[in-house]
Length: 141
Image 1 (cartoon, rainbow, N blue to C red):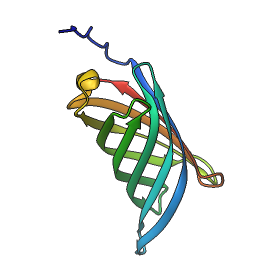
Image 2: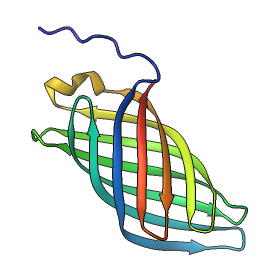
Image 3: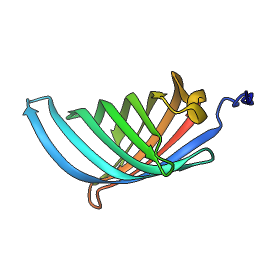
């Protein structure tokens, strides 16, 4: 059995570059908007690379802050599947841009990526609604 070397807190595990595929407004109130955004793109890291898809449910407040939950599905170039659930908060930083941070927990059945099982990671992201781009980084906790 191969022993995994411990991963230091703060280590960059992977990066995502994705684009919006669909946006849906679910509800509008005087104080907030509920929306859902789907992204598709690529994930790359030291341990794996592959495809990334994500559905984000957002509560966008009129003060420019938001919080959301996401469901993540990644498939590696070797055919392994990784899923994750994310919760985070963010804020608008410009006319079309925002940034946020949160935590994600990953799970996989892949023996070679078993170190990811139930691993909490810090996640940071930026978005640009004009271009539809999402940039996301996952760090070990």
